Image (cartoon, rainbow, N blue to C red; front, side, top):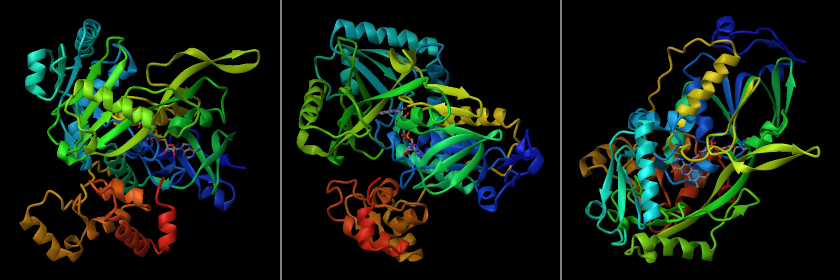
Length: 507
Ligand SMILES: Cc1cc2nc3c(=O)[nH]c(=O)nc-3n(C[C@H](O)[C@H](O)[C@H](O)COP(=O)(O)OP(=O)(O)OC[C@H]3O[C@@H](n4cnc5c(N)ncnc54)[C@H](O)[C@@H]3O)c2cc1C
């Protein structure tokens, strides 16, 4: 039994140390002010925001690495905020978040491309919808929006179909790598003192003595406050403590990634507005020089996993060619599928909780005493990750009775060394410091042995983790040449057998 000794500010009473409580030693060792469940973009950014205060925080993540859930497969677009309803939390967060995004990336050592976006249509309904979005954008305070004629669209995007009728340009949109951003927030939060329990699954939660007991498959953790960032599973986590309010339905969407030969094929993020006002394909010139095409929503799925189907891919490429006729399917280097969360309110009928008909269009954020739940945060969650993390930290601060500012917090996370993109002179100087920078392992992306070792020292424990940190196997050959050597380095660095490393290669 735990007896909480403090009711108000943890930091005022106990400084930066652990929360004082009485109880068995092993329990005291696992006692935190705040437990964050899930280490996707929201969990890592919540941890980082909390590190601005003096409090002890842990993040519990069931997968091998951070950003392995929704955050690993999305469109990577920074939305400027013209397509969110005025007056909503989404609008209040998204517009400033997009403006701040370049500075955030700079602080965290993450690449950002402020390429801007163009939304286009081919018919009158699409045009009406774009004009509404223009007015909505102005109402939301989005800067630098411009309606474009079809000629103006084509002069900015020469490969776009002549069928395009008009468009709207938004300067404040861009693209960055969601993995890079989440990993940077994780490293920054961890360096500031947040503890991460990876490969640890929360199985149950109980209220206890003014706090919470989180039972995991590895240990029991006590926390005074919980921030539930469990993505697609956040409804289930919340229901461990409270009656159902919001449940998540899932749908899927397919993606095609084109190789570097596609660089320059489009210059801006391109969105398409259909005549039925449904979302069409999105084309993204990624920060790494690839082209990403995202398809329309597919049917609702029952589970949380998603696989590409031949039919889905055919439809994706066909719709892609309607707007970008020169798209060449033979340039595709990878297809993948992503799961979208769709939160719905629940209502009680005959003693059972059932899903209501209407999907929740805004961010689904539920506040219960001591627990804040982000329930299946959809687009633009990547754009707003920092702002949502700040919102969660404010909640924790309120619940804990006011925390002291941590004046020692350093928000800067230095960018990892990247050989690709260096001049020969810069590279030569680096090789003199460490010959490992001279040993190329991934030829497509120019990744060296030293960069792989750095990624492992920074927290990568799987081949996927290395890929997300330094881009091995993301090039034209998709790992045919580098996987074996990368696995050997991972085995050497972690003391595991090659078989183990290959068995645990994916999240
Ligand atoms: C297809 C798609 C495209 C998108 N495109 C964009 C875009 O272009 N721009 C934009 O701004 N936003 C976009 N978004 C939204 C954005 O990707 C999400 O809002 C964001 O990634 C959500 O992150 P999260 O941390 O809430 O969830 P997740 O990344 O899913 O993280 C949740 C974590 O919780 C862990 N977890 C779950 N249960 C447990 C448990 N019991 N114990 C321990 N850990 C647990 C999971 O393993 C997971 O790692 C897109 C979303 C989708 C689905």
